[in-house]
Length: 172
Image (cartoon, rainbow, N blue to C red; front, side):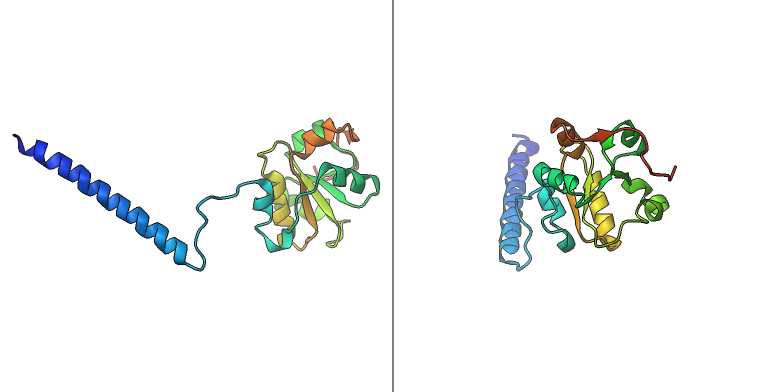
């Protein structure tokens, strides 16, 4: 019998044993650590937004956003790129894409006090632009920021007021 036929099963068995021992050891250490890592992560928009202490309860429902819109209780900020904003947005919303925040932040939010309630939105369940904008605004002192997940789509589906063009913004 050739040497490789004897050695190969031994190598596979030893490698498998080492792998199983490594997994058991790592799970055991993780279990007993005070700051152990969760084995299953929650990647929902709510969990991602609540990862910053300043953005607790950051998800706003369509019903709540609608009520705030009707009472002028919040400033709506569209986090999508300018081209999409111009094609259509929530009536009266400002446009502040996270990629452009350094250049246009002072102009867009010059009339918005830091204690204002802000509702950021973008489009699509997996769109992260509104979350990124919420984090950026929180880092800049705007601590009352909420996110309308899949905002543009749910707003349109709710047949709520929309507009196209630039409105009264002037930061081109």
